[in-house]
Every structure is written in C-alpha cells, then in structure tokens.
Image 1 (cartoon, helix red, strand yellow):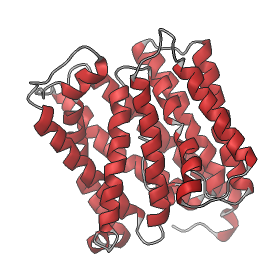
Image 2 (image 1 turned 90 degrees about the vertical axis):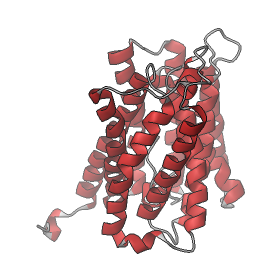
Image 3 (image 1 turned 30 degrees about the horizontal axis):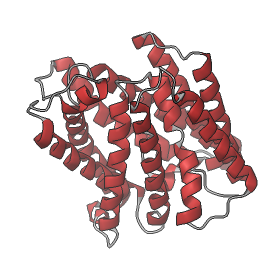
Image 4 (image 1 turned 45 degrees about the vertical axis):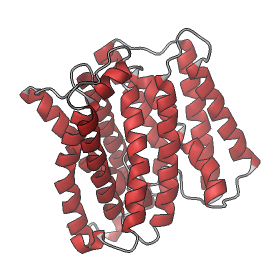
Length: 328
C-alpha cells in the first residue's frame, strides 16, 4: 500500500528514519554483547566464521533483490575486495578488545571513527575542513585521552585496538564514498562479508587447533584459543550475529534512504547508551566519573562534527547509503 502524498512529509520521514536507525543500532549492540559473552569459551575465529557463513546467503539475497547477482561483478570488484580487507582489520581489532574492556569504553573509543574520517577526508578526498571542525576533532581526541588515562593503572593496551578499529573503519568509509559513485551498497556489503569470511577461515587455519593458546590476557585468549564444540545455544548465538549483520544493515540503509542524513546521523550515538546498559546488566560494569567525562567529550565532539557537516551541506561521516557498513 502506498501512502497518500498528504501523509508523506519530511518530518514524518525523518521520524521514521530515526526509528529505523535506532532499531538497527540497538540490534548491532546485541552483537557486541554476544561476542563478549562468548569470548570466555570460544575463539574469535569460530564466532566470525559462523557469522560470515550465516550472513553470506542473506547478503546475496539482498544483492539479488537490489540489482541481480550480476551486479556483484563490476570493474570495481577488486577495489571492493581491497576495502573488505581494511574493514576486516576494523572488525577484528574491535572484537578482540571486547573481552578486555568494558563495553561502554569500547564503544566510546570506537566513536573516534568520525574524527578519523574528518582527518582522512582532508588528505584523501581533498575536502576543506574549517577551524570549527578541526576544533571538534581536537576536542574528541582529548576525550579519547581522558578515557585511555595513559600512565594510569587502569590503562589496558587493548584500548589501542579500538583506536585502530576507528582508524581503519574511517579509512573504509572514505573508500566507500569514492566507490559509492559506481558501486551499489549491496555489492560492497557482500564483498565485505566475503573477505570477512575468508580471513576468519585463515585465522582458523592459523590458530584453530589451540596450539598457540595463551591466557595471559583476555584479548590473546580470544585470538589464540582453539575451536570448541559449541552448545546449541552458543551455536545459535554465533549464527545470530550473521542475522544481526544482515538485518541491522537493512535497517540502517532504510533509515538513510528515507530520511535526511543529518537528521538521523546524531542518533548513531545511541550506540553508546546500549553499551552502558549491556555492561551494567550482564557484566556489572559501570563507567566511573572520568570515563563518563571522556564519553561526554567524544559525543560532544562527534555531534559538533555532524553539525558543521550539516551547515556545510556535506554527507555525514556515518552515511550508510554509500558506506553500507554496520557500526562494528
């Protein structure tokens, strides 16, 4: 059924887009929760393989519906695969940090990505960034330093993995802006998941037998632990990550398709709230005052960047119509 023109207003479309985006972000936050819960008994490679296998047919179906499977094979396929390798580094670095850090801290540090995107856009896309956005970027990285607390006893080197994730995710988004002029979002998502699966299988070959197992740090244990036969519930949770990846991507793409990007993009930061909720409910984690200050600074800086992009009529850093990627 098609709505009558009188019911289709920018306000209604933006409200619906915000609803879709918040649903998608909330769904992706469940993936963080699942992986942190599984990190005590299984290796990352096992969870990644099962996620990739589950998502592959779903993403192929999305590609078929959006333009046919033939649309996956274009002159830009090689560049999409190369981008997939960068995305894999972003995913793997983020996931490996989850066992060692509170979820809220991990998510907050991940939101350095819009700051990296702003910096990279200057050198890669030759965009002009004014002093206000540069000030917001500087403020955001100050918030990162507050959370990291270098030199303090609470510092964990796994936090640097999240910053690596933000940097590589930002690079992949810049690449998506360039690829998005000729390639579909469905094709970029498919090839991204294809590389994700291949690299997860490579990790399995390298570490799956458990001969390199190391429990000296939660991150190393999650990386090097051997495969284990999962319970039915755990297997369903691993496969559920693949469903989340496909369904969450659909919700986010729909949000940016029907609504103004700059209207919905600020609601990406609801991801941080979910990180706090899941950490409190399942792991008895609650950010201390210093962490809350750092989280607040990063959120304020990111919103300042989005606001300046709106003023300058630029696509927001997390515009997934062209970027197609889930928020880790």
